[in-house]
Length: 512
Image 1: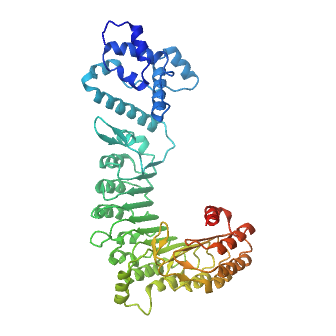
Image 2 (image 1 turned 135 degrees about the vertical axis):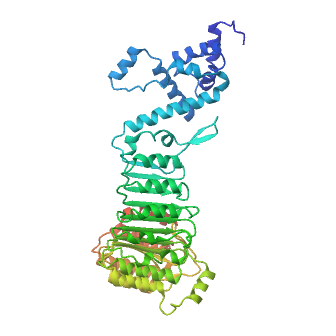
Image 3 (image 1 turned 180 degrees about the vertical axis):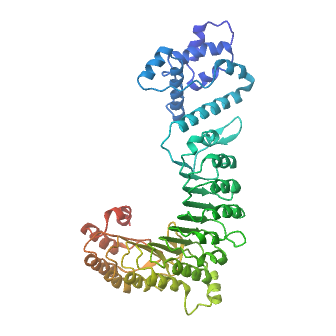
């Protein structure tokens, strides 16, 4: 374009472009910049937009630019009515010394870094009441010219010691770097609740953060990779076992005794909640030392194991219940395992020394004998052993929520199962209703439980009298069939079945 073109012609041409293009024109040369700036400043809200999300954001940016360009009197007026205007990011002289047209990529990144830094520091300095910080599933910002992904709060908040010193609950995943953990460990000593995902990364840094905590009470560790980092965490947790009240271990890798053992938690004498969720199998030695623990204050025991445990593991779980429930403190018990391959089960049966005294049944008997005060129960009942449900109802009369799984459940998250073998409880269903705990509010049958509509009808009729018509929830993973649905809807209308619990099921029943 010829430089001698009049200013009016420049502006008439520029007005016909999209606003994002106009902003780029300012970087071409001084002449274009001088002609574009008045257009953006004079009427920043009437330029060409496509009404997309990005365009709306650009429009908001122009609005902020418009505010920066106001006179001091106008800014003072805005401040007087409660509108806070952040300080300037940098001085014009400093910016001019740095700016060069052959470095426009760095210039854009500079805007990102400096702006985000100011925002993060302003956030940290104005949030005195925040004690909970989470970096779980945080969206990273892409800096295209540096080809880098970053989490702004992680990058800039580390220097805000007063902010970190207030944090009491902290959650994070693999997006956090080791440097962040080390910096946080220097000032964050009041964390009571710590949840770490992907513990195989940043292991030494995580261990450092754990060691400096003065009152760590809850720890949740998720392993999605190598367990070789456990030695760092084990050493750090060894100093905190007496203060721990909540322990949750989730593993998506095979647990081998060479790298992992729960023995470190044997000294958790104040432990109230223990959750062990294994999406892969484990070496039975992992529980060997821990099984002898006397966790006499334990209220919640939650064990979910993906692959059918060995007989040794069942015996260890049974001993753990015996040793820990000396004072009848357990209130919530969950012992569930998922689907196991047929060939594995055949090997298990041939190698087990407990064929006459099935260790799975021993656990059920242990619960009915020594856990009579529990209010919540999740447990796997072996196929063809549905009669043990009645024993549970007779012994645990305080139950409020119960979930029964068959041992061919493939996935505990959605209760899919292998339907090659059903567990028919039709003949026992009536006796279940006659002895159902009077405080029960939720009863679930997940897996391949099977019953006919006559048994269901008799069961619900008896429950109405047994529960004094107090509403409760009855859920099962298999579709009940048309006649059974009619029975369920009848009792839903009568008020026996809780509409809040069954709200998601009613539409599915009607469609089928």
